[in-house]
Image (cartoon, rainbow, N blue to C red):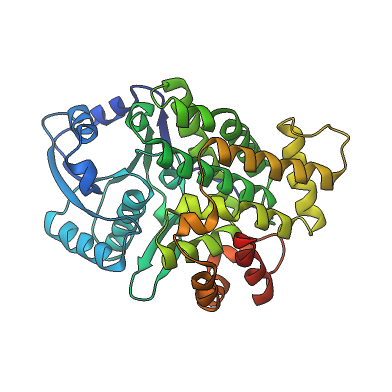
Length: 371
């Protein structure tokens, strides 16, 4: 038996910030990073909130939010006791907000509404039951999954991502593609998650390169914003896989953007998973759905076309070569592999990969980065 449910109310499209006009005389706490705290984008958010609300700000969020950041946020929440919490920003801000709210609720704080408003199109965190918290001392990222982590409301306003630079647009967009691909080949996939993942894949291939070139195109930005949420809904129900299990380690060890880490691993992961007959057929189905391969093509040929199109998309988006992206030598990468293997084996996302992976398999995928 499989289950599927939607817990987050979604408002999307230009002007969707107007959904905040329903709140009056509330204590609203906004969680964002230091950059957004001083940007005009935050002013746009505040202007969308009725003036009779009391607004407070927590802007200590950094990339890869740490356990210490979450603890500090919980302490501030206990002091302020807001009714409404708004996570505002990229995946780090949304994950931090979700974690802070989740732990605070467990401690008995009554938070009426948790709202997620993404300012990047990538993580899908606004509609997922997951958040990732890091331990800088151990160079490890911990993905947390719980149905109570879902935000109550998600607001997808493409105007908030119009100024996102091309490199971040590319990294986050390829994160979307990774989410959709892993959800699609997961053993927990269903007709419902398939529909979401298929649409997300199509939107990414159709719009990501344009979004990198023409960031002010609201139609394109809106499509990528929707793709991110669709993929988030898919993987939140079906799970992820080895791509994320290893990407978490690349990010923890070399401090590269999560979406970039995922992008670097896509080809070797697909080749590894495609050894499994079911996964191979599913990758091939996506290639045919996107018209990368004829409907009557051999599955292996179709998978190769999918890998080829991903490589082309990465070039169009300016994704660097792996060692250049990580700013390491082959020897430096080799030295970190044992620690990354151990941490990847313990990563919860590995549980829903379409085929099992031993230490040798994980090493092979990582070593493919410098072939």
